[in-house]
Length: 219
Image (cartoon, rainbow, N blue to C red; front, side, top):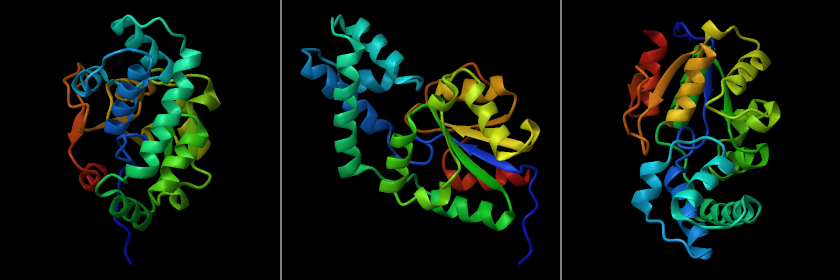
C-alpha cells in the first residue's frame, strides 16, 4: 500500500475534548462538586467559563466566582471521584478518532497524547474508550513537566520525547489555554471546535471533526 504523503511527522493530541468526549462531563462534575459545598453553578455557567488549564486553577476561579470558602484540597478529590463515576457511565471516544488514528498509522505519522491531567486519569480515559492500546508508551502528562497549559513546556517535552523537531509536529486541542500552549511552543496548532467554541485571539486553522485532520496534514 502506498503511504499518503504528509508534511507532519508527529501529531500531538490533547486528551479531554479531543480524543475523548469528556468536556461536558467535566463541567457536570464541576457543578455537582460545588453543589455539595452549598454552591449553585449551572451547566451553562460552567461551560461558558471552561477554558481548560490546571484543575486547581479551575476550582480556584470557580470557588472565587461563587464565593465558596472551601480549600482546593477538599474540592479536588470530590471532583475527581464524581468525574470518575461519570466517565465510567458515559465517557465516549470522539467521533472519527479511530479512523484518524488508522489514517496516521497508514501514512507513517507518529502520534501521542499530551494532557494537563495526571497520567492515571489519561490512561483511565483512554482505557474506557478503547484507545489505550493506541497510546501505550506515548502518554505525556503536565505532571511530568510540573508545568501546565497554557505554558508550552508539555508540548515541547512531548515533541522531544517522540524524537521530532517542532516544525515536524502538529498539535490539536479544543480549549483556549491548550491552543495557547501549542502556539507558544511554536508548533502548528489546530483548533478542534467543540464545547469551547468561544472566540479567542489566536488565528488558527479550525476543524469540526477529527476526520478533517487528514486534509490539514496533506495540505
